[in-house]
Length: 241
Image (cartoon, rainbow, N blue to C red; front, side, top):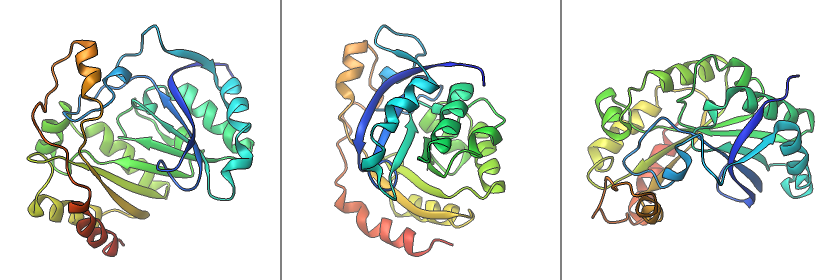
């Protein structure tokens, strides 16, 4: 196995919301999407003075120290940025996690560099961030076409990978009964979906734009009350295949 250094933004050791159970979350650097509501613009670039470079072996040795806390359900989640952009490092790290008996999860928008089988064969669960279910809507939200994410999804479906679907609900952009009905119908076309999560828009990352000198695309849009989404989330989950 060749050693590839990963570029890591940060590591959260005891997370409870990024997959089942207690998890370590590894945030990898780099993302090609420019989602209007992105709260981590500091993860976009592959370069920067605060990025940690680490081999997969060193990373997994560090993560293994938390194995007693993972229990039967927990494990490691690779997030970002977009973890698929660091394909070789990610594959190596996932393979080492599996060899160590650690449950692996991938938190992704599916926007990588193609050829995902080597990654997915070491992945137990995918948290798939669906930006939008129409081509036009996807481009409006992200500034990119959905082609790469659809290729990733096709591979995951063909390999029978369990999915948790995530969708950020933004007032005026990805909200409203008509939109959420369409989302429900789209999720209904997918297989191996275990649950769906509607994530309410928040403004916790706005200060990062100011620090980086980047205009914030959704200036003035108010955060969404999570309670407004609870009925829709229940409805969508009740209609999973």
